[in-house]
Structure formats: C-alpha cells, structure tokens
View 1: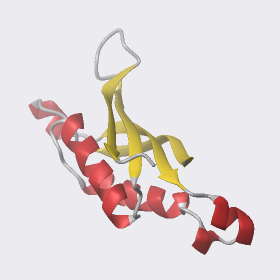
View 2: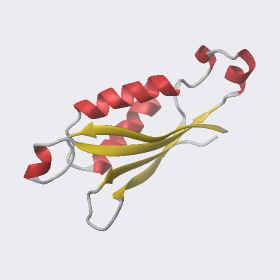
View 3: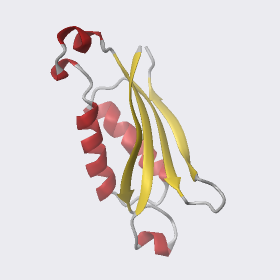
View 4: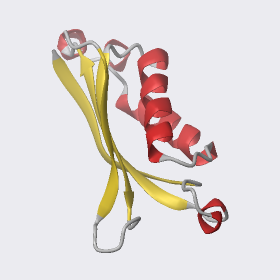
Length: 118
C-alpha cells in the first residue's frame, strides 16, 4: 500500500459549541493520509492514473467552508466519508485539529482511521 498525503490544509469554518463560536469563522487544520496504488500513475506519468490530491483538497475546502458543525468529531467523520466515497479511497487516516481552542495548547483535535488497509 502506498500513501498519498496532504499536510496542514487550513480551512476557515464555523465550528464549536459556544454561542460566540457560532457567530465567527475559525481555522481547522487537516493532515490526511490516503491509501493508493501509485504504480500506474508513476508508469504513465498522467494525473488520470493517480490519486489527484489537488481535486481532493479543493473538494474538502469547499465542503468545510460551507459546514457549520459543533464538534470536530462530526467534521472528521464527514470529511472521512466524503474522501472514501467520492474519491474511491480504500483507507485513510485523518488528523483534524482546531488551533488555539484550548489555552496553553497549540491545538486540539481528533485522529481517525477509516476503511480497510490493503
């Protein structure tokens, strides 16, 4: 299994449980590792034969910017489902963090794995 990854994708969204959080946009950060077989893309040197991380990134940015979840857990589950279903990825590991959410900590968040590793 090969891994295609996106690190530190920052997106502004409405996220949080407090009233003041529902009125502003906050930044979330994603690290995403996705199972992929890169051999065909490497052999043909053509994007149609590769997992297109730019397309994935653009789709995630659009989805997250429009979302208004209360919990990072919910956002993480929805992001994972989107990638698995829309991009035919069999397995992923997602780290979704909310920088500055806790005084004294750089960030807080969740790490989830979904799908089957081959």
